[in-house]
Length: 133
Ligand code: TYD
Image: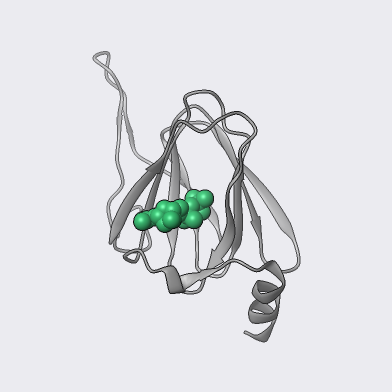
């Protein structure tokens, strides 16, 4: 699987708009865990790691930020700034989340429970593992 932007349904309503995602219609994996990143001070960077097994989907529920993905050879930057689409990040992609706007809110759903052993925190190790696949 490759990373991709997934457009979400948008129910326009003069009372306020509504979007959602479900497995398997919008999401390619079942959700085991949800977390969110907020109150990020200007200039801070989150992430800087890859996961051996978990898939994630990130939505900018509010504000904007950039998700920079590395596949071991190339880097691609995705700017997230709307609540009606998100970025699917399959396992084994190095990610960095940066350029958070004031009051931005990043919603992340994951295919697995939190597992400290699923993290690859060394970029050289990540490249070795990725290229061995
Ligand atoms: P981490 O994933 O390293 O943050 P980043 O978004 O910068 O990659 O997680 C930061 C801390 O939060 C770490 O000590 C583990 C804890 N944590 C949990 O306990 N459960 C979770 O679901 C997540 C994502 C993190």
